[in-house]
Every structure is written in structure tokens, then in C-alpha cells.
Length: 255
Image (tube, rainbow, N blue to C red; front, top):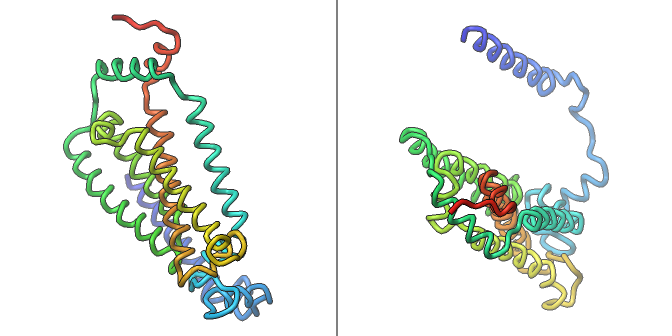
């Protein structure tokens, strides 16, 4: 225990020393360096009131969803293909899914003790609040839909560990519902990137034509839903016990 404390304190002191040397003493020579023209352009146009603008004071978000929006959009659909690929590889027929449910009903539903479950509930509530804040304020502050959705995925893993997958399914969190929510997120993203074309005669992803900050807000919310429920879909599929999968696929079921 004493050794762990010494190591932790040493890392903390080293971090403070490096931070002081870089920020105060400017040992790397970064202080006073002038912005490059490209940086000046992004800073001056991210929240301009006219012309090409993303209507966002958070410059990183402006760059991600506006100036390099196609790259971000294609990354979203690469993630979609990965989720659907995993879901397709592990898919079962209707008869096999019915058999899996029967076997899961026989399996004892283990969960952790009362203290762990109570603390997990509190932590998950905080994670949900923080993740929603990260996603819903992504157009104003650092963060965004992907970061918020990733945080929510952590919350789901905590619930899986403390309560088991079966408890969540009994509460209504099934693959059918997660896939539906996932599709809703992707639909919101597609509607937002195509809205400028059909409503204003603009181009795909020209979200600066949409009123105020609506474009970035919708994209962050759509990304939040897609990432959250995309991961949840995979977690629910992978949550089936290995012996159940083997039993169902081999057809070796004992009555």
C-alpha cells in the first residue's frame, strides 16, 4: 500500500512539474507563436453571422461537422457497417432465438451484492447526465455526440456487470428496441445533411443554411443515439453465454 502511494504521488509531482515547465516557463517555445492563416480562418468563420459559417463558438465542432463534414459522415457509416457486420455474423433464426431465450431462462441470473448495485445505480445516473450534457452542448462546448455516446456505452457495461443482461432485457432493453433507436439516430443524421438540398437548394451537408445552430445540434443528437444504441446492440448480442451459443448452433439441446 505504501509503495502504491509513493508511485501515485511521484506521478502527480511529475505531472505538475511538466505542466509548470510547459505553461509557465515555455520550455517548448510555444508561447507567442502566431496563428497560421488556416487557424485564423477557422476562428473567424466558425461563428460568423453571415456567409459560410457553422454557427458554433466551439471551433473543433465546427471543423468536424462543417469544414470536414463528409469525412465525419463517412466515419459514422463505417461505424454503422461495423455494428451491422457484427450483428449479422452473430444473428440467429427465429427458432434459434426462441431456443436461446428458453436456455437463458434456465440459467441462474447472477448479479453482484447490494452495495455494488446501489453504487452502480448512482454512478450510471451521473454518467447519463454527463453524457447527455456532452452531446446536447456539443455545438457550444468541447464534446459532441460521439463522445457522449461513448460515455453512455460505459454506463451500459456497468449495468451489465452489476445486474446482468437479463435484468436489462426484463426492463425492456432488448435488441429490437436498441436497433430501432440506432436507426432513429442515423435517420436524424441523414435528414439533417440532406435538408439543405431539399429546403434551400443548397448542397449536401451545407448545414450553415439551416436556422441558427439547428444543424450541428441535430447532428450531435443523431450521433449520440447512433453510438449509444449501436454499442448496446452489440453488447446485448455478445451478452449471450458462450455455452448457449454453442448448444444452439450445434443443436445439442437437452429437454
